[in-house]
Image 1 (cartoon, one colour):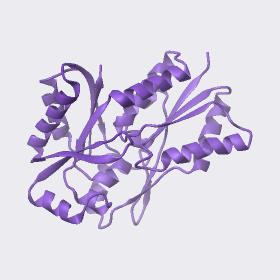
Image 2 (image 1 turned 135 degrees about the horizontal axis):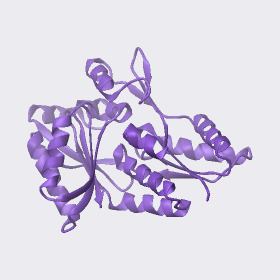
Image 3 (image 1 turned 180 degrees about the vertical axis):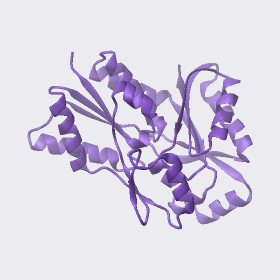
Length: 288
């Protein structure tokens, strides 16, 4: 049976216990403050990151993994597991150049004669919105599924998952150039909470807005009811940036309307958190 290695990047926000259980190989990305750089998930925790973020006068920057680094990772894994296949799943190409770096790494290996069975997948999402695809792929690999079977299931999940997220403040979206300054000011003054999602191309877009966090949570539940209709058996992942109370409220409200099977709770890490700020709550749902 061909050994299949699942690779991803740290923006998948997969709980460490799950990473260890299924042997997922996570390539960390870097967040850069003015005075210091940190490797996500290695030398800074989400709580430490958000604490630094709120105290920093300038928005940090993030660094994606270079093609050469991907080559080194892929070659190292193949040396450890000769003849293995690699499925590498990454954050949306609409949000980061990470996917392109991985593709280029594969091309570089083909050019120098070290090509192997490497499949690069653009998840067209971020955080556990594609972490759920990575975990599904790893579970299937552990059961002996083929590369094609795994790729097909990853694509199926991409099509059936639904997601919404809200931010505590529009400040970080504005700082990062994702929203106009005037819109950010209005949202703050009126306590308007934007509800956002990610389109088919993996790009963030506004869905709705609500006055206050509680109403935003209820509105998100209504949106999922519209998305799934009579299908009541769902899996859910709720990710937050130091906002566990609202995350738990989402789970409780969803449980009133759906039969929740797998329930995942995890943190929004430093790289995604750089662009959305503390207080974010992201909800990812897919059929059970």
